[in-house]
Image 1: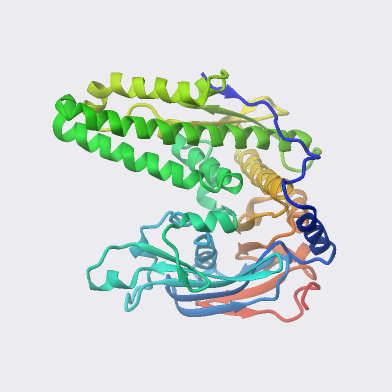
Image 2: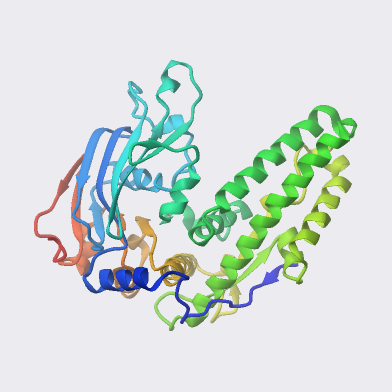
Amino acid sequence: MSVALNASFDQNARPLDDEASLEARDQMARQGRPSIAVTRLSLSAFRSYSNARIDLEPTSAPIVLTGPNGAGKTNILEALSFLSPGSGLRRAVLGEVSNVDMTAPWAVATQVALGDDQVAIGTGLSPDCLTGGTMRRIVRVDGEDQTNQSVLADMLSVVWLTPQMDRIFIEGASSRRRFLDRMVMALHPDHGRQYGAFERLMRERSKLLSDHGVKADPAWLSALEARMAEHAVAVAIARLDYAGQLAGQIDAASDGAFPKAILALDGWIENRLDADMPAVDAEVMYRDALLAARHTDAASGRASIGAHKMDLLVSHRVKGMRADLCSTGEQKALLIGLTLAGAKLKQAVSGTAPLVLLDEVAAHLDDVRRAALFDELSTLGSQCWLTGTDQELFQALQGRAIFFQVVDGNIQRETGSSSDES
């Protein structure tokens, strides 16, 4: 069973904010200033870059990185993806991100224009990892160490598409779940922390059951399961709320080059919450289900039900066909359409669109969809970074984008490549 989503997005709704802030945002839009823009990106010991730096004016003009395969274009997008919580667009082990010399921990330093404010955001591998310390990621905002990566989600949202995500509809549920959860954080910044807490508790319960079976301390198991239920239901509520609003955003949009999607969530908790079950009752039901599953989970070494099992189901609306049965081109168009709809939803609800990172997305689009994508990105009001091996693919952006050539780790800005330059 899955949850068919009711469209709950009001296209005329404005964010709950004071009038002065709303007027400031509107004025910023009229002046062509972006709501989010990276104005400086510095890399140190990051992937193929020993040291690199990109300086930009605050602009919503697309940033286009072109160059041969292996030149380091995707590495730049990966660095920007670390402006959000998590392990970046490659889902890399932290140590893998370091430059091959590994003489220093990798670091990403940025200056980000958030409306009228300039914020310094830095992140990287903890220096003590080189001397046997814990491999952990640190985050600094305006020079101050942060206790948790979730502070990044409170400040801005980042979305991305990579070639590896083209198989999202035909792979396992985990890829679709990660895709949805990243978008959910745009409206629910605490979502990542809630899901991370659930996973930590789940691992602790699994280890306890693996080590001791059902003879494990019942009070300890019950305490873990109660906390798992609290976080799992919070995760499910955020997913349902976001997916419902996303469905509404899709409904409200006019037909275009990218097909509209029908969305449904398939999850043990989501299915019960959608039946108007109060959250507290869902917590009790899930807690009882975990208790009943202890024998099974002890044998398998993992929890058999929970927030980690939810699936996002997508169908092509016009064709009435599941996404996994659509053609490769239709699947890619559906994925782009969902990403754009999510960016527009974030803009409509908060007044601020996300930073968008698109790796080699234009290469497999026909001329009509490529032009439509560029037009959509130009209306978001926040920066979009695109990569490609063939500059000809981006001819439609000449005069309204900033172009960089990336060759053998050298990043060279092309002169006169954007009419938005100040």
